[in-house]
Image (cartoon, rainbow, N blue to C red; front, side, top):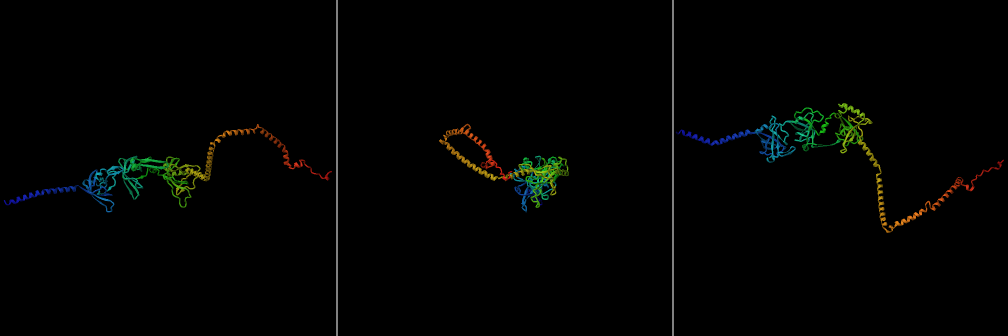
Length: 548
């Protein structure tokens, strides 16, 4: 009996021990299970690089994908050189498959941009970081947060292109890509290549509009309002409402050009033009360059001005002036060289010319026949000039046919220059007139006239006073009497009056006497002493000894 008591006591102790430790053991097991679950559900830790930590808080800022939480920010610190922010993010287990090479992150916050207003829900909940899953196979753990949301997701179907331009700032991320005014894509990325020194603009063309991209497709900048002033006048174009606010880029194959092959290669390169006029000019890539020498002013003649033949465009002004005069030439040459080009595409089809050699031979023949270029006004409002060509039969060929290794296109003084010379001649004659003397004499005459008018005014006032007198008012009757007496007196000297008849008889007698005196007067004129010696002629005496 004594041997069985210890055994029972041990069993009883064991029961007490197992009962006491059952709860902590279960708790420990549950804790281990929860730890395993936590470790098993915990995803990888990633590093994000941001320009600023605005709106980002440790333990509060979440990482979301399609508005589902997939991670949280656990640490924020400033870089060693103080130029950026690094954030540690603990991702969920399910989010590990999203972290690929092309995965993108950006901060979602209230934005007012080209696409409208977005992120208004973050006004109450706070900013968060959006994750766009990648589709590539290579995994990645370090990412750079984008400044703006991406235009298209990585899995979006479409075509990405690269446009090159010599200047930056022409397009911004999110700007529309237009085809005939319809938005078919967006500007996705903007960068600058330091090797080529050109700006690169990455476009994304949504499917199915990517089938519009051909090898001969041209891209050009589209502004909301395009106002151009040239020799042809004003040209105003207004784009879509979106392009009116933000601008954008348009594309299509120019009319009359072959479409070319369909572009399917991603990141194909294309050139970005400033406007559609430059696109059209690229059609005329085959041309012959000439130099025109003008004696008159070329103010108003700009690069790109047309060269026309009787209203038909045959070329373009390339450079004004070609160069400035050298020290040896000075300004005494009085000729401004202008570089122009005669374009084969504009002449082709009009006279059967199909090669540059044929065009050059034809032009040389036309120069011999009198083809000349001259400046004319294309727009009176803007003063823009253009080059007009025509045939002048009497013109002689210039003594030289080259200028700085360029062939010479003969010129002729334009009508504007001739009119200017005539106006200058008229103005010179006008300047030679004694205008100052004339004005001085006119001033003196006006002064004299003014004095005369003042004197006349005084006389008129005096006359008014004289007429107002009673004696003056009685004058008319006295004057009539005096006039009657004068008339009576004058009647006494009329043809029927006696004095008039007596005077007429006396004049008749006087005339008779004068007739009788005429022989006497003639004799006195011939022999003044005839009144003393008489008119008889004395015969010469004859000597006495001479008589027989």
